[in-house]
Amino acid sequence: MFTGIVNSVGTVKDLARRGEDALLAINTSMGLDDVRVGDSIAVSGACLTVVSVAKDSFSADVSAETLAKTILKELKTGATVNLEKALTLNTPLGGHFVLGHVDCVGDIREKKERSNSIIFGVEVGEETGRYIVQKGSIALDGISLTVNQYENNRFYVSTIPHTARETTLGFKKAGDQVNVETDILGKYVERFVHPDRGIDEDFLSKHGFFK
Image (cartoon, rainbow, N blue to C red; front, side, top):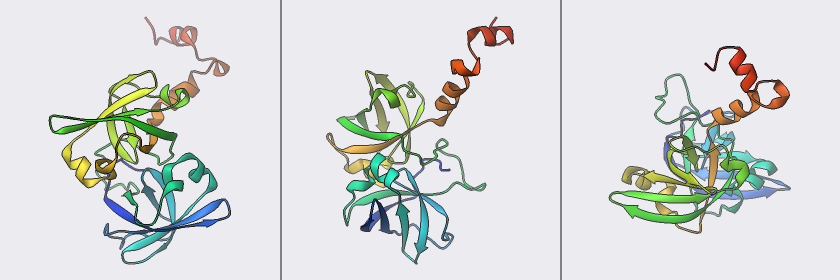
């Protein structure tokens, strides 16, 4: 589990294909003294398991599912990625709960500056869009952001100058893609109120949720 507060930007050393899977090697100045084999690190929002670690680099396996559902499959040597170590009990929760389970790849349709902020308009499919709400939380390439507006499968987020400087979003432009993870709360609510579970308006009214 993560918070969506990026620790550092790393550089891809290699993405070696292994059948349908891959091994991703990343150089970083993040500081890896506390990272062990088996730990989780979010790479541009995708939770990966560390399989080897050195002073200033680490490697992680990337499954076929992750390659299929994220922008990691497009990584080339020298590409930059957002990095975040897994949440601990001593980690400030400055963003929101991010699982590192990417829902889909979103398409950046708009990028414009407004005052000191950069506004991104990102388009997703309806299957993902139904979990997006105005003023709700969303993670783009592992960055915790707030949805300013959502309409017709396109949502808008603002990034402050610090976020643009310290993450890969500063380099993104219209036409690029980003990993999108919606807030897990919406998925659980949908699951619990599914008609097959018998939780509907009548059930909620009977048990005092509606007056």
